[in-house]
Image 1 (cartoon, rainbow, N blue to C red):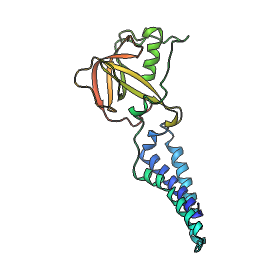
Image 2: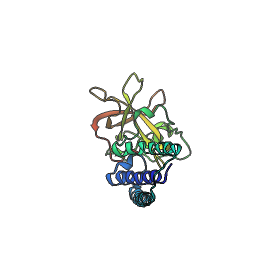
Image 3: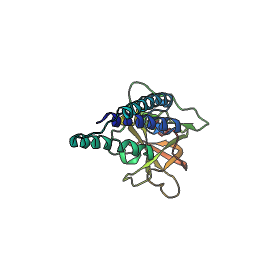
Image 4: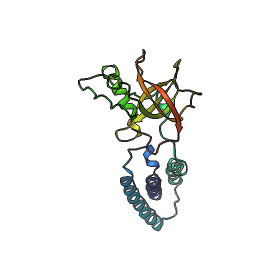
Length: 228
């Protein structure tokens, strides 16, 4: 790859990082809160790439070797994926990857969850819901209603449907999904990948999939932070 192609690549990668960080789209790929660091890194890369482009243009000379022309063309082709990301931002992880990635596997251990407070609805992550369901067969839920948010994922359940949400430690590459079955909701089943907020109570399921018997269900737009 020629010097000007390398410098342009660095410049475009920096511009991509600035675009994602400034627009908030970075939360589709990494933990929320990493935006300022990505913005700083993007500015540094863009500055480094711009300096390289200027230096390469000043040093540019006619090339008379056919093979060198061919290698330069290959180098420039490497810019295509970066340009594509600058023009189109891919969506966050969705239902397609749930069945193809590792799922959160929780079992009851030594720690016992405290009982949920009575008299109010408790917002809860899908991961905590799964953990509480595995702890002494969901004893900590009692009759307290909880509120869950996730996207609809395909399933072969005879009743209800499943929602999922990913947990990431650092970025989307290490994402694993928590899954909950929602039953009792009135109306038609939401579309695949539709985000919903379900409110209801925990119920035991014969197949081991944590289950929420819904008293209300609302379709929502994709959260700013799609991960737990």
